[in-house]
Amino acid sequence: MVLAEDLFLLRDGLVNLLRAHGFEIVAAVESGPELLKALLDERPEVAVVDVRLPPTFTDEGLQAALTARRAIPGLPILVLSQHVEQLYARELLADGTGGVGYLLKDRVFNSEQFIDAVRRVASGGTAMDPDVIAKLLASNARNEPLGKLTPREREVLELMAEGRSNAAIAQRLFLSESAVGKHTANIFTKLDLAASDDDNRRVLAVLAYLNGTR
Image 1: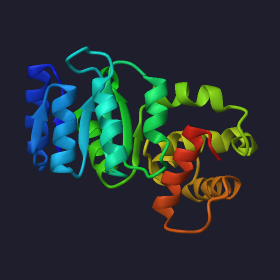
Image 2 (image 1 turned 90 degrees about the horizontal axis):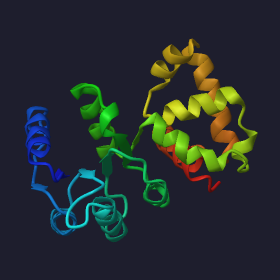
Image 3 (image 1 turned 120 degrees about the horizontal axis):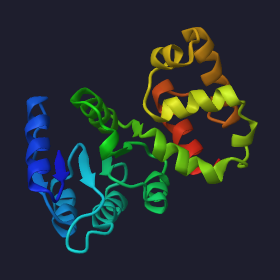
Image 4 (image 1 turned 180 degrees about the horizontal axis):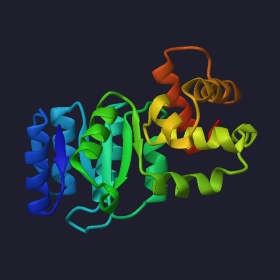
């Protein structure tokens, strides 16, 4: 793993937390240029990246991640931020390869939630904060065939974007797992996602939904 965070105490705390859960930290950096070099040199299995890094504290972290992901397609990136940078978040999702996450720092409430998100992104899945999803979806409401989704299907897909399993979605929406399975099948059909590995189709459905490109 490569970790980028400019605040020493937070960076050190994340390093200790991740190591305690079995991650090997090959680089823990504090600036955009250092991050880009580490990503290109180390080609990690996953990177956890703060958006705003030195030298300008604007979007160096996300820009470095995007540059590295263009050079290394599918490089798993989990963004940690205090804000939703909609333009860059959408660009991060644009290649449709999965392995992306965007969490808001003040909404990560425990270590289990964070570690689960890291593992999900590392395995090629998605881990999106609900607030990020809401902002990215605002401009996609009329997009076709997204507009074909029923309100319940949109709820299911939003929870899929958070990385929830069918069982977790069923519990959250007070549905049976079989009902959730039917909704996901309908989603795949309406988004024109051909039969393939189910986990892969879940990622493609989420990315299509968030991008509004299908």
